[in-house]
Each structure stands twice: as structure tokens, then as C-alpha cells.
Amino acid sequence: NFRKQHLGFIFQDYSVLPTLTVKENIMLPLSVQKFHKYEMEQNYKEVAEALGIYNLGNKYPSEISGGQQQRTAAARAFVHKPTIIFADEPTGALDSKSAQDLLHRLEDMNKQFNSTIMMVTHDPSAASYAERVIMLKDGDIHSEIY
Image 1 (cartoon, rainbow, N blue to C red):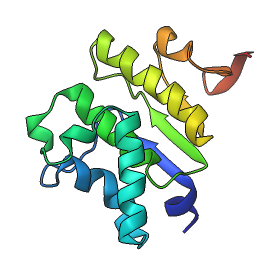
Image 2: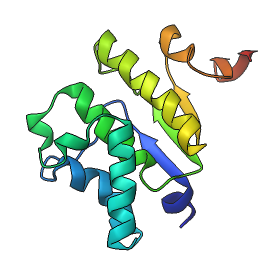
Image 3: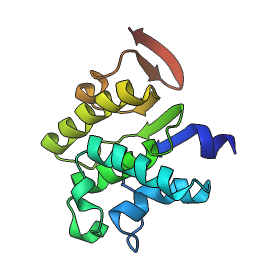
């Protein structure tokens, strides 16, 4: 229950289900947690609008761009308003423009939903969006930037 209620995940490879629409992909965590339909619709609308994909709700992943698929994955991570979002190289499979767009939107959503985002990245540009950066070397904390 802790994982379902308090954690959200964004993966490098989108991890959206190809047989579900954008809306169904985003609402999946709410279905699993048995949210009421009205609350599901409200949460979906809020995150989909924040990520600029509300108008794509009836499309399938194969019909949208990689950047839109990653925003779908981000919306799915935020839709149940978790305390912590784990993002594993969320911009790794995106071109630079889509990556910047996603990072701006994640930054906005971090403030809007007051969720902590723990992001793993090798991209200094992506790391620059963080309030705190912890650098690891050989499995140990090498340095920190606040």
C-alpha cells in the first residue's frame, strides 16, 4: 500500500502500455487504488493539463511522439499525488527540446503538487533543475550542491 499511495515512478523508456489510451495509461494507478470515478477524472484532467497532453487522451502511444509518451508517463506518476516521484533518466530517450520541455513541466508540477522528485541523470542540464544535487562516485556520495 505504501508504494501505491506514496510513490510515483518515471522511467527512461516511457513504460506506457501500448494497448491503453493516453488517458487510460494515466488513470491506471487510480484504478488500482479504487479511486471514485469523479476523483479519477479530476486528477486526470489536472495532471494532463499541467503536462500539456489533455487533448491526447483518446490516442494510443503509437500515435504520439516520444516526448508526449514521456509526459504521459510523468502524468501517470503524478496522478495519485504521491509524496515522492522517482525519475530514472526521464530525459534520456528524448531530444533536447522535448527534454527541456519535460524538465520545465516537472519543475512546475513539483511546486504545484508539492512532491519530492528524486531524479537520476547523467545530464548536467537536467541536474540544473534540482534544488539539491548529490553526486555519486563508485557508489559513495562524492559531493553535494544546494
